[in-house]
Length: 221
Image (tube, rainbow, N blue to C red; front, side):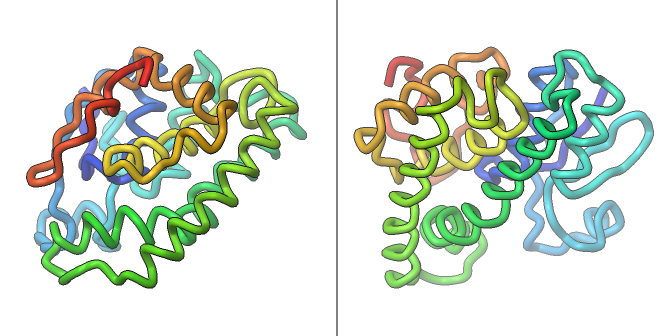
């Protein structure tokens, strides 16, 4: 069985979990306190980051290459289109959420409000929280524009781009940091994607001292 060393609210871990679940790859989840720099974990990944996946006898790290490996070795159901231009767009959007969105939103909201407390780094920086709350509005508007022109974020079919975005949004939704009333299109997209069987384990996550809001695991909000 595959084994994933993860943190429940990490969007990068969640993206990998969604990819594995969509392809029906059974995986054992091992919660990793990466900030404690445990020697055993550092041997698995000297960068001291999650996710780390053990699959096919290989220990692999970083969510992007992990998802690419899973896609290349388990191509069905496909999360990357065969057309090079369409594949480029998926990769662009994955990078958008894992880089730009993460830097502007996730790190300013989730990391300030949750990670700092869990890792003992002190209290949230109110300036960062305000910056994240402002930035997410821009990203919601951009997603609305995409979804006004497409069925899914990258085109007519669900792809890894949707999982990358949903991984971030599900983590933020756990702490009630998404204004779902701002965009009906985004809310409908998220309701559609979180109703997939691949989302079940994520919606069952519980983080000590941080109970989720009532709507978190409600498929109809």
